Length: 244
Image 1: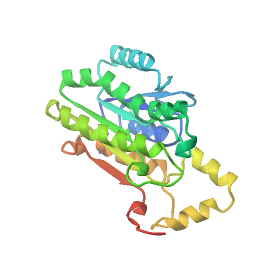
Image 2 (image 1 turned 135 degrees about the vertical axis):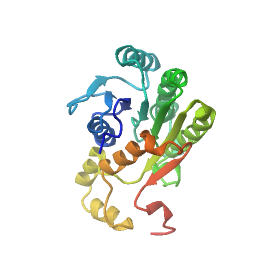
Image 3 (image 1 turned 90 degrees about the horizontal axis):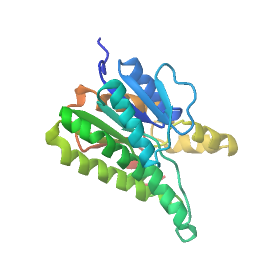
Image 4 (image 1 turned 30 degrees about the vertical axis):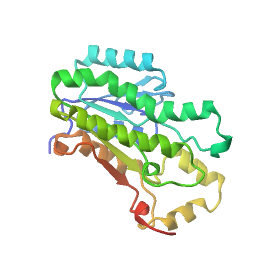
């Protein structure tokens, strides 16, 4: 079977670890020229990995311009970078609110804005935004993160419709509980948390970054050429359960 992203140039944010690293590795293995961006880049597993802060709009524009100059085009953008910002609403200060939206919405928008002109010019492109189950279900104690993720899904749908006639597809993925480093660290800090969380999931297991990566691969590939303005939940069915 031929590589599913052969000849394509893909930009992946948050590519140094967790879901972003799994996506970048898989895209690279499937023939894409991958440019990863991360605040703290480390090992790159064969793909290009650059330092960058998604909340710095000027820096992101410069990285996209440099990528276009070097590779001539950008076919795929995966907005994966983000961070949990959880607070009691009444204890939340303005700086925390702004940080939540900068990391989980504004950064994705700035990168979309940077790549869209080139995608319009080539009349082709795929954008995949990594949202969250928090964008579908409200979990107490997680404010304002769900607000930003609901907005990210809304932006995904809106941009997908706005640019569909230009051959551009914009979709999102909403992971549930996935074994990324911060979740592993949580389990290490809190004895019994792994077992309790696993028991809540219908498959009785926790998802892996690779399972999210394969969905991103499908959405980025030409196999998904008629899928647009859509969000795919990857949570083992947990969000469909009415009560624990």
